[in-house]
Amino acid sequence: MLNDPLFLVMIVGAVTLLGLAKGGFAGVGMVAAPMMALVIPPLQAAAIFLPILLVQDVISVWVYRRDWDAWNLKVMMPGSIIGIVVAWVLAAYLSDAVVRLAIGLIGLAFVLNSWFGKTSVEPHTPSAAAGVFWGSMSGFTSTLVQAGSPPFQVFMLPQRLPKLVFVGTNAIFFAATNLLKIVPYFALGQFSTDTLKISLLLMPLAIATNFLGIWLVKVTPTILFYRIAFVLVFFISIGLTWGAVRELLLHPPAT
Image 1 (cartoon, rainbow, N blue to C red):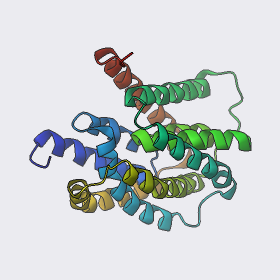
Image 2: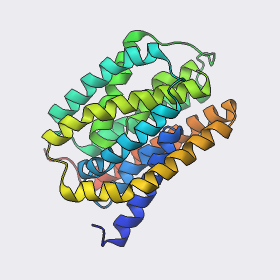
Image 3: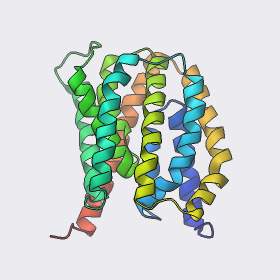
């Protein structure tokens, strides 16, 4: 794989985006999995990313250790566990394209409703049941295609939490989710000497871009941060939807 120029370009770009996402710009990391899906199978890409994500999680959790919301983690983490287990069971039966299409449509509906809907734009706290549901969706999609951010943000963004609290809650939620994903990835046989070697080689870049993301979050005003977050979700959702539709048209599921 390391002898393939296209693979190298894609994985360097993907790891850079993951670093920015782990630094606090949640959402941009979702582009990493579709990028890598152009050159290797999605679950293999996920196996390369997971050790990198775990190291980035340690940095992000330490930086934002004082800025997080306990209630949101309390209602979303049980859902995440459910989603990871369901993804583990269904991994052999679900098309990655179908999962990405569902994520993209959810993200688009959420952002368009926020921008053009008649609902109140005032900050509000969703129900605990909604937290469990969106937590399970996030755990499910994160396990299958490393795209757990849109469901997470559907639940979190309407609350309009302080910028660092939002970022810290995101960091802790996905750090715990990534730790839980180790077992199913091992069980599905996705880790190998080659994937771990690639992860190790990319670790310095991953750490550097993580700190770059942390710096960018700290210097970005709160209002601008939330505007960027909504725009990122919108364009990433378009990308996921378009890519999934294209893949389904080119390679329809077997009936």
